[in-house]
Each structure stands twice: as C-alpha cells, then as structure tokens.
Amino acid sequence: MEKMKTALSHCEICPRGCGINRTAGKAGWCHAPLLPKVALVSGHLWEEPPISGTKGSGTIFFSHCNLGCVFCQNHTISQEGFGQEVSILRLAEIFLEQQERGFHNINLVSAVQFIPQVAKALESARAQGLRIPVVYNSNGYESLTGLRMLDGLVDIYLPDFKYWNNDLGVSYSHAPHYRETAAAAILEMRRQVPQDVFDAEGLLQKGLLLRHLILPGQYRDSMRILDWVRASLGEETLVSLMSQYTPLYRAKEIKALSRKLTTFEYEKVIDYFFEIGLKNGFMQKRSSATGEYTPTFDLSGVVAAESFMKREENHHD
Ligand code: SF4
Image (cartoon, rainbow, N blue to C red; front, top):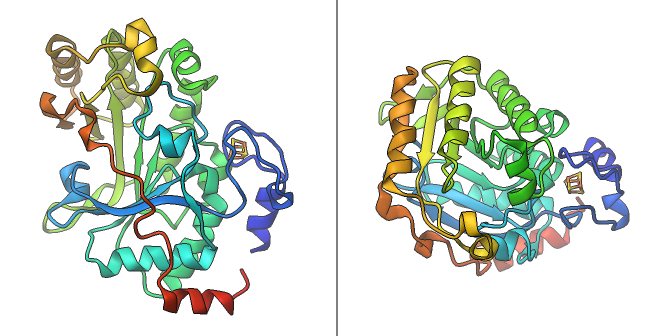
C-alpha cells in the first residue's frame, strides 16, 4: 500500500510525468482521480481469436486516458471521464467476478492512469484465487516506471503502436515523442513476457500481441512500424493489423481523417507485412469499419452487489 501511495503522491506513472499529488486530490493531464474509476465491466468477443476465444474476454473499461485521440471511439469515458470510482477491494472483486462468469481472461482496457491501484487489486485478487490470464490493453504511451509496477502481474500485453511519425502523435493524440515512448514501452513489455505461450485451444496464456490501427493516408507510416517490429521484436511477433478506422468524435473536422481506410491502403500494408518476413498476423474484415462495435458505457458490473458493499464498509484500503 505504501508503494502505491508513494507513486501517486508524485504522479509520474505515465510519460506525461505531471508530478502532482493525487493522494491530496490533485488531478494531472489525464484528470484521473485517486481511486480507480470504471465505466463498464463486460465480455468482449471481438478481440483477436487467441484473446476472445469462444467464451469471450472479460473486459474492464477504465475511465480517463493519458492520450487525447481526436478519433477516439470511447471518448465518453476516455476524455469526458464517464465512470464510477471504486475501492481497490471492489476492483479485486470485479476481477474475480469476471473469472466466475467464465471468461478466458481479465482484460484491462486503458488502465495506465491507474497502474498502482490496478497492481494492488491484482495482488489481492491473485491471493483470493484469480487464476485466468490478465491482459493489459494499452495505448502504447506508457512509462517504464509504470510498467515495472505490473511486472509479474500481467500475463499478456496488448499494446498499440499508433504512429511512427511523431508529428501524427502530436496532432492526433496530443502525445509528444510517441514513437520513442511506445517503442521503449513495448520492449519493456516483451522483456516481462519473453515467450508467447498458447494452450491446447489456441488461447494465449502469456505473451505480447501488438496492435496497429491503419489510418487513412498513412499506410507508409504503418510500414515503418512494421519495419521496427521486424527488426526489434522478430519475425514471429504476433501483430494485429486493424482496418476498423472510422471518423468518430472530432475526426470528422480533420480533412485527412474524415474518411475510412480504402481497400488499396489496407492491402498495401498487408502485402508489406509478408514482404518483410513477418509471419503471425491477424487481419480484420473490412466490414468491421463501423462505429457499431463501440460498447455502451452504462456502469454494468461496476457497482458492488449488496453483500460486497457490506464487506467494503468493514475494510480500509
Ligand atoms: S497518470 Fe495522469 S496524472 Fe499521472 S503522470 Fe500520467 S497524465 Fe499525469
């Protein structure tokens, strides 16, 4: 607990390095509060097959974000902050409830701004019998300080590598030095889980699966990211090339982002993937480029059942 409080009293959990005291109620760039804040607990069947399998991935969507993506499909929670604060104990219970629902794994979606609290809740849930793999679904804008708090607690890293050109990171996500930051973060993730391990059903139990959303007009940027993957992580790296870009949120106001990806652009990147010798790719059907897969954030699964609430009253985090 002391470690968590120290980290939050001078918050440098993510690359923004705000240095503010969250234990004193101060908020930094991400506006995240001290307690973990969750917008939705649900099951997700649309992740890559080794993550979703047949029973789904047990997603927990966290509120707030340390990026400000103009095309964010989850902007109501990431940038407008919708969600409910929960205690560390309740968060650990949410993890255990997801396991009881039969999902293949726990899937932490955009939890960077709550890493110390999530680490504490994971330790508690593990001690109470959490056995299924923990997936950490990341935007790639992570610090080594933050990621090291998750060492030994996360089984599967699912990071984005969004941009190679840092100007795109600034223009579209308000994120300086995105390329170097994401590259260092992904190498740290790989250090923590050096091998990809699958079970007999082909479900990922440990490892790293890198995601890249191809943006309209930016297929050459995507190719540079694939070059880095090939050179720095190797030809066997699991890579998901996503074609689902849809001009949502503020993207319609930006000419270059106001259209979907073309088949030509997507195929250019797929062809390049194989051309440079990468082997393990997950490709998306072009029909997935629609906003209808955005979940409805309605706090489902967030609020404690009555029995849990009674236990919380007697517990001091
Ligand atoms: S987690 Fe939030 S408060 Fe902490 S450094 Fe990052 S943006 Fe700033």
